[in-house]
Image (cartoon, rainbow, N blue to C red):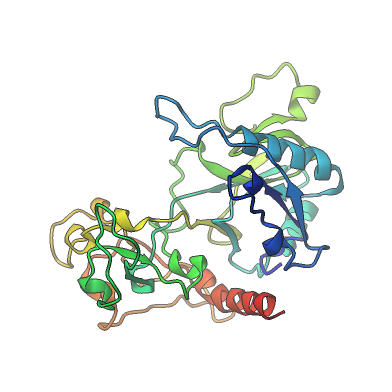
Length: 326
């Protein structure tokens, strides 16, 4: 609702696990006119990486997406399929996605697919705490003795902070490079035009019916039907995919100090730049943050916090408090 979605359909296949738990307790916290849970007891075969000898086969997810478009697409103007760790954040003059999409609908009659480039955001080291879980090969348990992140070999997410706040650190400036591949993207699309959507792509569209003589392009629909979203003036996708504690092992030796020649590519935690992305729509000014007291202060930056995401965090926290206090 904060972002501007009218309704969210949660396809819940959690009861395929041995625990027999479902997401009903979560979805029931929301008004039924806003959130619907769809029981989806179909098992995911595997979720391996694409280059694995047995690549990912998330048949349950693929079928769920097709089901959602077939069931609810006829009553929907714009639709998107997102993971729970993906945030669509309005930028520029737009305070929510609904108003922006109304503008696109009214002013771009040919636009049917809006594509977001996605990058895996880094967990801001200033929002993390020393690892305090069970001992694993790369990380020994902290045991509650060390509360200083800079002294800890491994880090983990602070349970008191939202994923949006923790992962508000983009590894590239905006707009993202035009040269980036269109292979891994997320889309908001018009279901009356997109007949079949597959995770990152609009696989089958009305063009197959209207222009069967045209060859289909790889990963992208022909202009003017698909266009890229402008990250600076329309919105961007914050992908808060979890960085596990073992991925942060020895982070302070892998993240180069300022004025050194080390490589930042081995640094798996976010060292935020003092220059934030985004411009305030009222003051037209960006924000600059620097403090010698931050954990990140001594290290070379490798990511950029976004001003809009930062200012949405209190609204998200307040909304979560209202849900849990009922």
